[in-house]
Image (cartoon, rainbow, N blue to C red; front, side):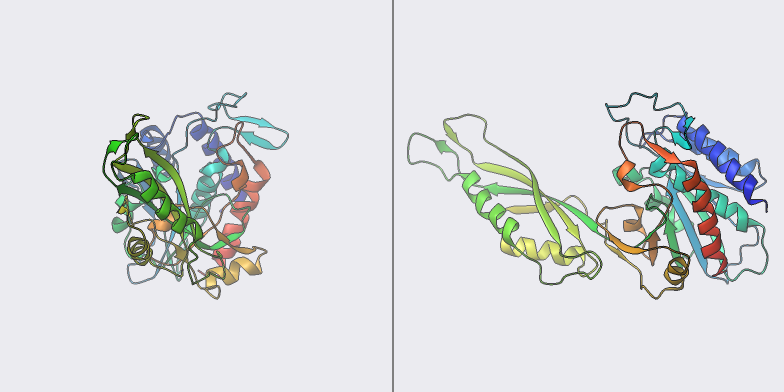
Length: 353
């Protein structure tokens, strides 16, 4: 297949995507566009809500399968935009537009890679491409919704902007809503049991506690109290104090084990919003990692969470673009990054299939 045409089509698709609002839970129009992109090329697609996926032409259920995944939802434009976020503008080798870097460049590069392999025969692996929704909000109607319908997956590439380096580990996330309970009373008298003081003791434990196991890729675990709220009147001792903990979990722990450690060490009531965003890890000797490193990729551990957290098989996070540009005003991706991303994806996967 002509790689130059693949690259041109990928950039054209990205320009079309930029022109359509696709905030999380509002990705129906970009899903339609992606679906049409495939069907115009004679590729059978599947769609559920705002997720679109397709299998390679010679899919064989007896063979292992590689998942190529990225998302087509975006955050809302940063208030600092001076460009029109929905106008794709090429300037000085850059393509500007909302979602160009996070993660449109990755998505169209993976789609181009899928097209390259789609018609090939006698491959060792199948391919499935999944363009999914709600990644930016870790929603339930994105990859998690359709993953069971993709068939058995052996390993995955998740497209996020990494400068085509390869994240071999990614922190999971738990958000815990905590309530310290006391007893209301008048602040001028020796009445009540101040819930704020109880919360302070728990928060101090959270601040000082060090988890014993340290990840060789992600370093130590991290907990941060990020929200606190108590009281409604200056002369009333508050009976409750609510606070929220952001917990970033490494592959050394299970989410449930971390939750138990916290519950066993603080007095406040702890309610997890979810335990589904799990840490990710792939063996550095995995053939995918070996092939990527051979072709110039550096390995690292990622502190941020992506749809990797929802994939229960080995996966890497890898894609064109730079994470530092994500969610910024006047977001852009270098056109050369997309071209090089497609080349690298194809080169790496060609060594495996």
